[in-house]
Amino acid sequence: MRFISVLTLACAAAGAFASGVLDDNYSADKTFAGITFLNGTASQLAFDGVNYWSGAGGTSDGILLAQYDADGNNIGFYENGLDARSTFSIGSDIYIHRFNEFNIYKQTSPGVFSAALTLGAGPLNSQSGVTFGGGEFAAMSGGVVSRWDASGNFLGTLALNGYNTQNNEFDYPQNRGLSYWNGYYLTYSQGVMSAWDASGERVGQSVLEGAGSTFDSYYSFGYAADGRVWVIDDASGTWRGYSLNPVPEPATMAALGFGILALRRRRRSK
Image (cartoon, rainbow, N blue to C red):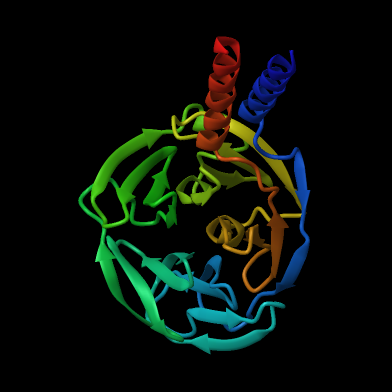
């Protein structure tokens, strides 16, 4: 009976997990001011383990990269010439994907970037941001996710089922923003964040309290390595960070369920 109870609890947990992997709402637990002299539109906030970095896009001229310390104090700004559509980290390295390119640029020293790899042929909208997670690069346009492996080889596309049905999420520019967290793709529109599993099903939604819904907000939305989703209010406005609860990835939950079943069978065979 003890093993049956454990299995029941595990299945119940898996069911709850599948129906909503996010809390109903999150409050910002960290905020700081954006940089007023960044040209263009803020393009996500990345964390390298020590500092935050924010690229900007809409132009290739002027200040397009800001550096912040762990408390959000500005400690540097750079003219890097990259018209950024996304800024993200892989380990302690910072990367930028720029407008209308398949190249991914890696920061080699503060403010200095060089092409690190090229994504293989596949659908990639000129405005879409690229994210990295689960060993893959991904980008989204209008509810269709394009995927590449860590070497840039194209893997195929994934349609997000029902993507265009809620919160004007099909409108530009929110229809080109994608992030990755804990085995799930994340999208954002009108203050609501959605999580999508590997089969393209919407498996969770959450209100980000106080999060912006401006043009800049949609371009800035992204998950950073500090465990937070970040959204800026508007151009040069306030960055708001929302800590997401750590939960098992889908594969972990499946492994847990199968493990308990195997343990139960073993117990019966003795």
